[in-house]
Length: 120
Image 1 (cartoon, rainbow, N blue to C red):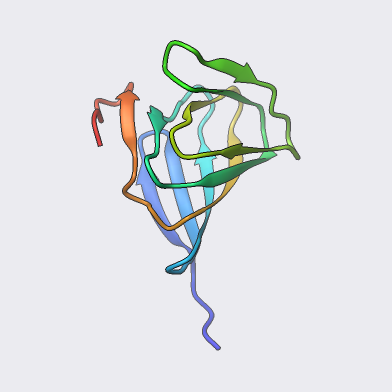
Image 2 (image 1 turned 180 degrees about the horizontal axis):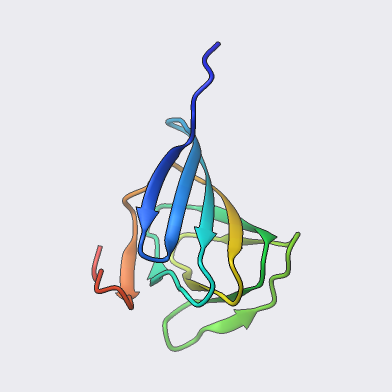
């Protein structure tokens, strides 16, 4: 039996704590600072479900960048992000988001990013 510390990955919007990583799944906690936002993005293979653990978050999802709808997420609610779904998260207050996904961590296609990280 092995006890491991989560792996912390600094991001311009906050940080990720990767607390589970296997060939079959990944578990993360995303801490998003109030006023910051993740990229407008989609994944070609990665299948994920997010769960708003705490805070207030604005979340958009849709089939394309020009067909996004705001999804009402409150603390305690979840949303499944299927591959190909364009999505973005923006923190209204500091937020903690749980993410359970397939292990395709590098599968990110950024359509828009306020921190200059475009492309894949």
